Length: 232
Image (tube, rainbow, N blue to C red):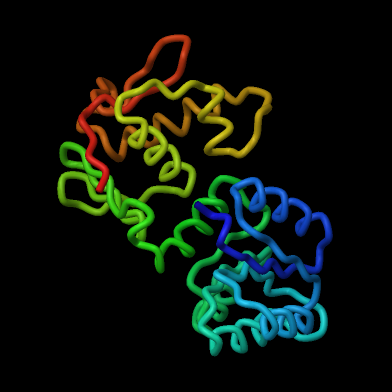
């Protein structure tokens, strides 16, 4: 249950605050939003938070200063950044942030990263690993191993794989994939977009991507993970 988890969201863009407030409260979290670094520090002084979602580009006290202050309080921090430069994000991570998401963000990816960070201190409340024949996913590190070798997946590929594996052989429909991975109910041409990402994922986890036995089509419905799965 997430209802006892409190998240502080810090961003100077009102529409981003509205989106994040909706997404996180919809997952059951308590959410407090502020628009400035000063307000973030003051709010964190007066309340206990399980996570801070922090934009680095803030007016006044910038996100780096806020990150440094909140790190000393031991509050986990997830960075939001619209900057493409890796050094910008790395600076925030060096100051104590645990993870980051680039703007514009995929809704489902952000929710999963929030859940992962909050769950690091609640390991008894969620599974740690999902395993199938020659394939394993570690939820904490998001590391994927295929036949003993680390596999580098894009965030979308990772979300697709986890979604399919968690269903333990049940069919995941086109619409469910769109909603859970891309965070939307409508997208023109979405089936082709899903097909392309499934094909890319197959090249990384299938021995023969042209004759898949791990991720298989259910014609007219969607896809399913065809091997036995253990979640622990």
